[in-house]
Image (cartoon, rainbow, N blue to C red; front, side, top):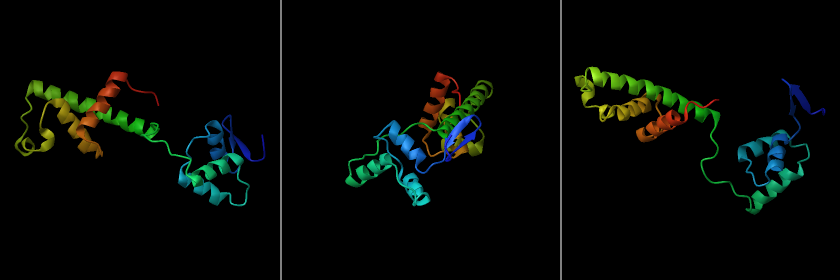
Length: 158
């Protein structure tokens, strides 16, 4: 164990300057280090020498040969949690709407009959209600698709 590392819960954490960026670039030289992360490392460790892998990455960025990968990126833990929350709320709301439809119908009382989220079959209504309740920046079709995907796959482990 070097002087710049620390043992925490059976793992050794490297605390040396540019350790994270260096590890990422050694694993995949074409990886893109986010600008704010790179800038923070440079500010925090301005007196320490910059590793060669990070220097090569900086040179490629300044030359314009390093390109940021396109696309959505990997799913994060927060996105998975959001999707699970959407799925759980959707399942509960849809089950309630189906039971209500079977027992009383979905006419609704006077104030909600004209609401835009009260239109359509129970699955559409549930998706709109979840979208409004969670204040999501997604349309109701996306909310319903997320819930159906998780229903099809089963709940993921986090």
